[in-house]
Image 1 (tube, helix red, strand yellow):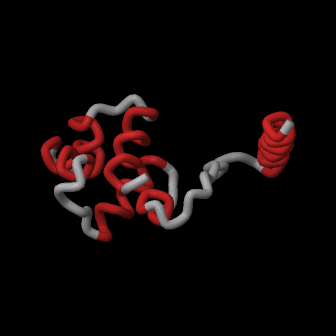
Image 2 (cartoon, one colour; image 1 turned 90 degrees about the horizontal axis):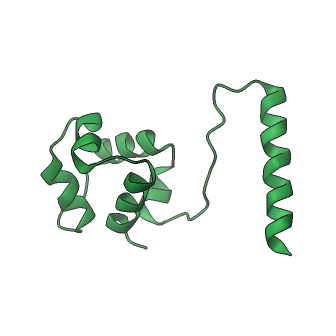
Length: 96
């Protein structure tokens, strides 16, 4: 999957319009459209902003690393353990 497709997928999963995403990173709707249509490539600064909005790594956005990560910042250690157990349980279920 290329950057434009991944960006569009993340944006739609987050329930954001191009205009809303543009507003969050301080650009215009047309720039987001250019990114999604592979007509422009974001600067490193914009790439970092997009990664922060979607809680993913810039490598994930660029398709370098396809490992999805789960942002657990703000959770205490007990909550992180619960999330980890849930992920492990679901992973085992889906491997069957």
